[in-house]
Image 1 (cartoon, rainbow, N blue to C red):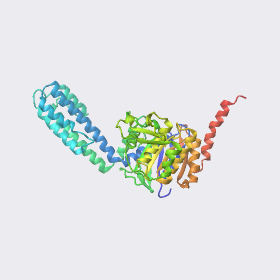
Image 2 (image 1 turned 135 degrees about the vertical axis):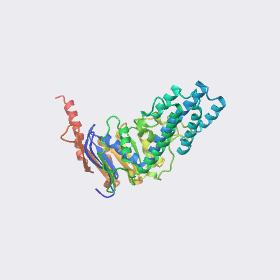
Image 3 (image 1 turned 60 degrees about the horizontal axis):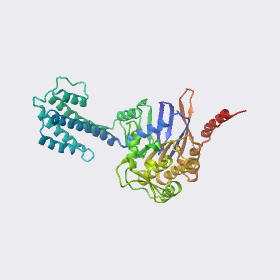
Image 4 (image 1 turned 90 degrees about the vertical axis):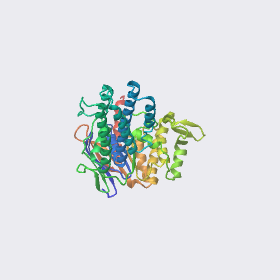
Length: 439
């Protein structure tokens, strides 16, 4: 392996028995369905994303927790006012003003923690009243949000509130400790959430950068990557503008947030022209007129007519995602863009144009790509356009080959030789001859 290569190695993960994948330019994974291409794509995304945005992810979890605590305190104050008449109207009005100000997006975490502490102080002052000491509903709510088996039934409301205060402070401190230590166990937890249906073995993958292991079984901490500073995973253009997430497609949520940001792009008129004139006959934009996610993205045709991008053809969406990422500056020479089956939903002519964009974005911007494909035109177009643009020295093809064990595959490095991939494609033609032969 060359010193400058970025490499991810997998062993015995789902269908993958062995894979050593270089990610220093355009990497194409080929193979039949069920061979683990999407597993490699998804795993690579979550490894790089967790390392790159470690602090933001950890703080995001703390914010979710603080949001839950704040909502719980609001419920308790409303109960004390409306149900139990412990808080009078004037007091409740003042408290409501304070609660409305608890905005995690606007305020810093420290201020929110202090505000929560003040709200707990206020609740503690009310909890000393005989009427409040042992209200079953309030005690149940506090026990539920504390989620601790160590809680005792005899705990009073005041005691539970003090435990809640302590839990909030400990949660914040734990967050700071995580940011300092960056334990690899946090990555394991993130991957367990991402691969919820069939958790991955935690020590069966290694990532090396410039020849040094960044992530491996013997390392207890995650070092930041230098060559990759941002990443995105596109497994379907249908993710564009989706506003409700099941919690299982966090990469959709992240990609939509990235698409919704403004930035400064690298000035490349050639790529801009390809998007506007050769493919889309117009351009995709982030709407300036609304904050509603369902109307956030628009497609402006060259004749001046505008359309809600969500209602446009899926093929247009596929190119629109790339165009917006290019225009808002997300795509740089430190970006790893991971795309599963980019040819899906594309007309054959557009498959070649998509391959052309992949090559040109790598050549002129420096974007690294990890592409999973089983389309002959996509595989060959990337090769021949890369050769024409003289970037094939950074092109790597891999073919998933069955091992002796059923449903297990090794990823064979092919360099730029795609003959073996087309031999695997020929199996489909042989089957067509078999099933279509009427003689």
